[in-house]
Image (cartoon, rainbow over all chains, first blue to last red; front, side, top):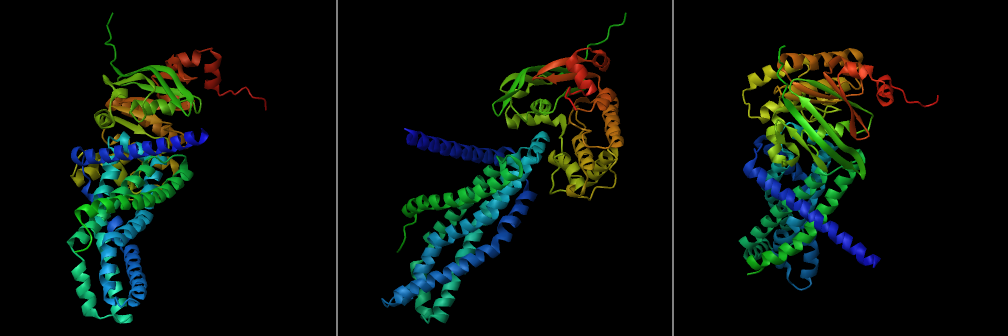
Length: 262
Length: 254
């Protein structure tokens, strides 16, 4: 009985949380169409989210691509399939590794910053000050971050994928000695627009998840510095978990529209 | 006999109830504020004065009761619909609530820019005038983190006043300020009332300040309006609760 109640409470609070996120999403869309879009803040956020996340994303992409290529090569070379490393790395980077790893890194870097900034504004009454000055906090704080994320995230995912594939190519052809011609030919043959579309769509969805989870945590922070710390941690943890779970369902759904393989 | 026109009711609060963390903070608080007057709301710390003030501008929604500002039921309005009411009001928060990512000038100019003002010369002029009003001329480029508590509060006041609101809400405007700055804030509140006819509601513990600025005084005690009247009536009251508050007696043994 106690277990049933415990599970019920968890389910209820999770449903309530999803409801809160949906309401924030609805308010954001309303803000875009009914409120005032602060383009200066959108640009500022593109700089913060997009430009300043590049190093993290590039390093993640490069080393993931390189290590994935190495492991694939070690297995495939035993089967005389060295030249298949290219398409395997490329398709995996586009469809899964690029968007997921980029999403996780951005959730850590940008999600934490967003939630900490909004949380501090909340506990120091700056959000109440915005409201008192007749400015809707969602219009001023969430809408610019949402729009900036929509622009930045696909570009960051593209960079992550691009550098990953390039690192894999360099390592496989220059260090491990696989033929460049076969590598590139096979890679281009098996990688198509459907893989690119899947990667970019996933990236955009993960960006939206990060914005709503982080902003929701920040806007609901309470109890001073401890509350801001808790909100920041939860933003990163929940954001990362959501990315992994949403990725599974996205893969299943997007595979219907963009099936893998020729 | 000359007949005086009855002042218009700007704010009317009826049977306001609010509960925070299971504790009933306001238990049917009612109050009326008339146009152009300065009402000082007194009460013990944690008694719900600031909570009450936040209801007036729609920052909190009551459990029950109604709040009417300029004929509009604020408690029934949604967040986006509250903007119109809020544009006519200004609020000074207890700790200033300055935007710490902006300079003093940007903080003060914020309400102007948000209302669509794009003429930077006009904005600079208005910011200058507003900062002069609170004796902070020349501090435009400082960041809030580099200001003292008193200065932050005065910048926040300049920000609240820049759009010339018809009604000002002050949450402890003189708390933590030295007596001279505190007096200058009192003078400013009085000046705004006389020159611009601003209706003010001031939450404070500072009895000196209260007597200096109030047209009417209300005492919030145990979630209800315990006293409402003029300063003279407050001074003359023999009620023990009022006397204890006015004279600052705790009845505790040393």
